[in-house]
Image 1 (cartoon, one colour):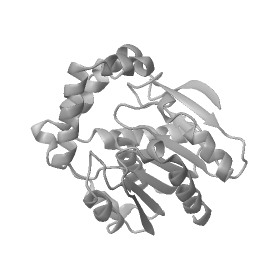
Image 2 (cartoon, helix red, strand yellow; image 1 turned 90 degrees about the vertical axis):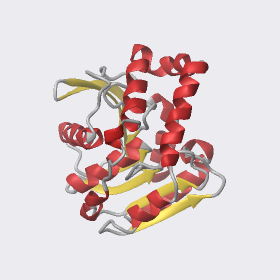
Image 3 (tube, one colour; image 1 turned 180 degrees about the vertical axis):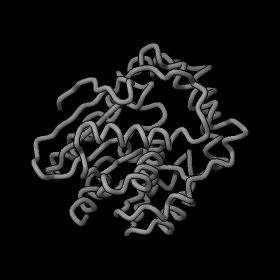
Length: 255
């Protein structure tokens, strides 16, 4: 993996890029609200090896080794703005055949990007993404906030995010629990997704119900498939990696 900092809209983004398979798609990994490139661990390279696909993993602005957020106060449409930044990143790297693999917030950003920039996106793997706000999501956010205050969670996160931890944690928790965010919803964009979609979710996900899956796969315009994994929580790629690798490999073979 080639690791470097790339400038996008005057912002510094850290990327890890494995581009060894000429003419093959690039699987772009989008991490969750507390994640980063490092926290995907060896999953991207394993998928690359199994499928002979190129891989791009990057730290969203404010995370990992990328530059800091300018403020923790996010607008309601912050994930649409992240999709715009991802589009610019893809343009800067001359990537026009991306398969987006997004987890949680990253899954949502993947859906939005596929809807807004279809010419660059060949397929979407949405793992535990959200298209609207649910009570279970807010419960999970509040529990994470309590853990941040009462355990060594901040210390553990600082290993990956350095001095950006407090800013990114506030950005996540305060945005999702704001009154004006309660009505956030991206269902109106789903009809604009024409590429194949695989939605992966654990049936014990502590941050979202299966309604997120059903409402997504039934409203996109392209082919769609759901993969519900019994007894699995919010991070299937970590909890049952072999199942996810096998299913994603099957999906990539048919798109």
